Length: 169
Image 1 (cartoon, rainbow, N blue to C red):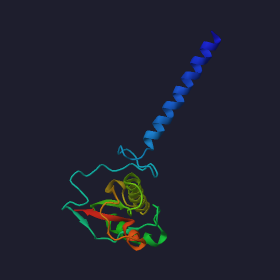
Image 2: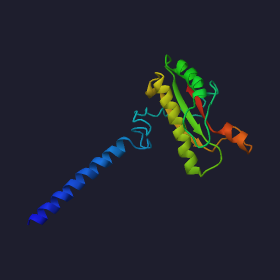
Image 3: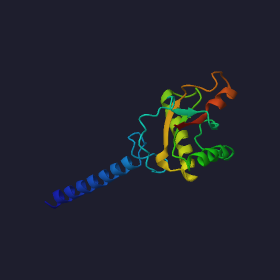
Image 4: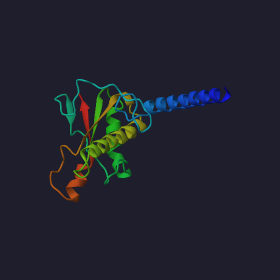
């Protein structure tokens, strides 16, 4: 009888620990479900259904893109001036922003889509750190799709490892 009670207690304890781990994973998950991003747990803004990065109501090209190193999603110090320019524009305005992440052609489609998302998210976090309201920023990843330079080689790949901005009008 004591062994059965002990086994039941151990099973109950394992269940509680497992449920707690699942709850934490959902809260700090990949951001796919739209609840939280994976970088810092900052709540993601609701999607502006009327805004598409390539839609007529989004002004692209207003700001220079942010370039990234190979296999990196860290915003380098040299690129922070570009991020600050965007933050200085968006912070006092009522406009929303879409940050799109892109990669070069190396890697699988799945890997590149995930890396593009991490790039967009890291730019988003930098903007939030500069005082931009998180609810004004959406992210999207296009991975290796839509390269800035269709050529091959390191020079073309370097131009394709980027994040671009779209200002929602």
